[in-house]
Image (tube, rainbow over the protein chains, first blue to last red):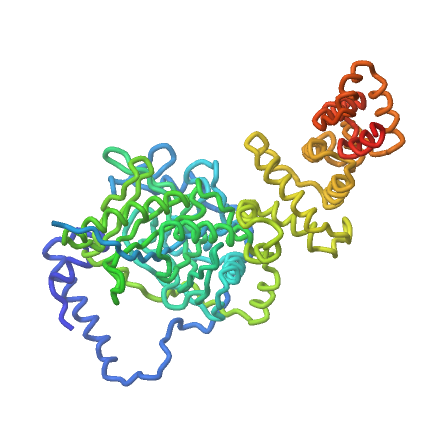
Length: 95
Length: 488
């Protein structure tokens, strides 16, 4: 599979990244290498093999429906945001 | 020239249901943010701080299974979560945890009041996103709702009219609230509907291109949006244009849908298995146990009261689950330890249903719906007294209203009737004395003479006089034969 510049633009757009030309070039190369490496798996015949969803043999990891106090309160969390107004996180206009 | 064609409309509906758990789907914070300050019900998990691990709420799983039973659906014993990636400030993680490939609820159906079946494709669990408020140059984010457990119910395209689209949404609302998995507060977005609508020429083998109307939050707006889309799409098709596959928004104020974004710019959610949440593996015994816990559903009540109450009365009462449940308790339940093993007859059902619809659902009394309903004992006694004419229908209504009076609601029916002084006099001896007194009154002499001369209609006047003399307590039906006997 060949990663094109268009693929990089598409992925950047989906993640809302703005990338410099230099970054695009190096990311394209990195991604190309990763995909190439993984593609080796294509040589295997996996028909009839159940896909691996989890690497741990765990299931039903759940908790009771009980409100617990949080270590970080509203103010501490809001202060992590680049901007806030009226106890809300302020972001550039989206629609 | 364009010609007007009668197109066949096909509708599929996706419904988001907020589950009424105490905490969110993956974090241990308050899930009920109604009336609370923005960003006051949040945790580091909701903020997607690095290293935070979501922990699945077992109660949400339980409610999803219950919801699945309400939808007559198969429950998948193994279900898994996936990440649905999209970049939007309403979810700080950059993805929503959902179930794409292995949803917890499999295929089922919803039966509409007229018997039409709408098949359910599947329903899956996922987390809700935060709330955005848009201003001139910026948007504000409130994450109180981010992480609220949802189930998204996906119907098959089995709906073919605006009225059925509305009926389906309303029936879903009933099913989810009856099952006790959702508060059902549409105004606060507890249930939201996305409606897919396409038109095709009658007999066409393929469905037309669909438009999706997102985020409708009332039954009425679902109906209106479908009606509007039918007009819009049929005009386009009549004039030879194409319907664009797109997402549209609905405005209650303008009564129109408008284009929001075109699906042509392919959405690419890059789904992947959610590595942080191991799969859910349910025991069949747990699934069966949940099925046994499902309370009576609308369809059970329809079956119970069919032929006893008019269909439209049943549908009105079905909008108020406590009322129809009370009626069923009176009529069908006889294992009630607290009240009585007695049941009321079908005519008693009609009387109580009539009190519910004419008194309780009258506009001036709707606030009473928040109060505790009368007990089975009180209502059975009320019906008995009405049937024995110890109470007139007016007196019955007065007594019924007092069941909601904080000063009187614990008293038994007869005591309330006595205190209101509305018990009717049926005792023949007592009534005869009053009748004698009235007939002896010179003011009535003319009427008596008229009756004897053959005028039937003065009988009403005489009954009225007896009622007056008894201070309204005589049972008019009992007075008439006595009058006739005495006037012979």
